[in-house]
Length: 138
Image 1 (cartoon, one colour):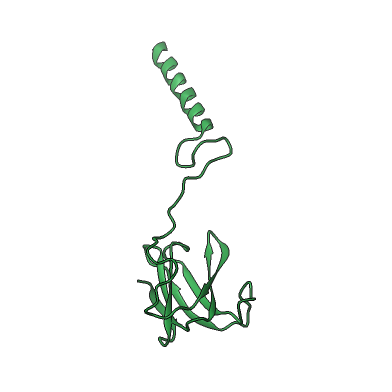
Image 2: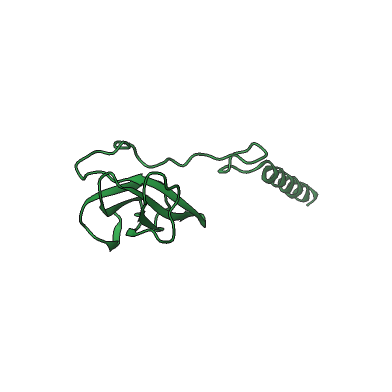
């Protein structure tokens, strides 16, 4: 599980899986109510956790029914996740679901990110043709 850095251990806990990168630090702040859309500078910091290598973390010191924000960064961009406190023995609505799977992305030229682009393939074919011509000349 995630390593605890700050906060108290009373009350329930909140878990978050697959949202933030492993090793990143995520801060849980208490919201003033359901109408609040993002955390403010004066909001109470409840807990701070470091994401495990499997992408999960658990916050301590939360109260059932209270609203919270988990704030961290993904690729240098700040991200806020709205959460609602639940009792320890109550299963959350995401119970039984794993982390978010990494989906394949596409480039603008239609190739997949994890495969060589059309430009890379054309350059490779050109280099092979040059190597073949120089080999035939010898």
